[in-house]
Image 1 (cartoon, helix red, strand yellow):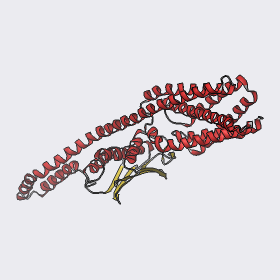
Image 2 (cartoon, rainbow, N blue to C red):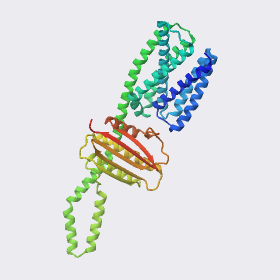
Image 3 (cartoon, rainbow, N blue to C red):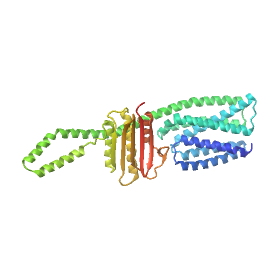
Image 4 (cartoon, one colour):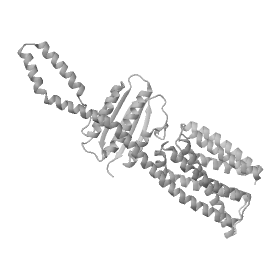
Length: 429
């Protein structure tokens, strides 16, 4: 088959790679930059693939390996995941690509023999490309729906575990790639090739079942670690608030003594003494006062804790809360949600280096949904990807986990140097 007929197939294959990578990985670049990088990759892929088909033989095998390296570099450039996670995802995808390619070719050969349908080289080439692309996109849709939230929520945590999983993916990729090369070179007859392919594919499916079970437990470990981190941070703030409340109770208990002292000043007609005493008492009361933001104790403690921290950093803090005293949300989830929203807002204000930074948060209960909008001063040109900051922190992973738990949603918006995060929790489940 001449090279011009193969160019569309190479283009389709490289485009499939780009689509899969776009939805599989955490993006490093904004959409325009990603498209530009993808165009460069597609051009390189088509050129290398066309050259491999033109020369054939051993050079084609070397070119195939070069294409794999090119795809891996594209993985690394466009993704912000940690290197060990990139390796695992790349090897998993390329192994899946190989197994799909081998499956399509074997099925076409069996179909041709069984029904005596001869395929011309161009026809076989285009049918194989189309079926392989359709299969990979179907697998991508299933991955995006069922596995992507778990994989993405792990962010760059526990790199050591990714390194333990990567060699397993590498082994199966080499096995599938070896079968592909043997098939291309015609170095082995069809029956042994099919048997080897069936065994390797079965082993790959079984092992990956264990791998994804391990990834599920990685997510559970991460959620537990994030909850402990939030609880430890807020426990010190809550202790301070409890001490302030205790001081208020003490002041109220001592009120009769204060009134007696004021009465003594009044008997002596010492007006200046009364005013000075009242000023001193007012200052003492103000320092110990606890701002009441919400009737819900957990939300009130969280808001009070971050109001104090914002004040220490010269950040204007305002909060409006319209919720009931009891909510169908666990306290530990409220801490993970609101604590991380406010912690990220605090860091956003600090990194903006702007005058008069602020944090505003509005929480309300509406139609069995808990809505919260947190706005804060942020750096100029903060990049977003799919409604989330491009450089996703661990805190955002924790917020996402809570939103998913309550069938909710998290969405970010940036406008005029202000970042707004909106969360929705569905309390009627």
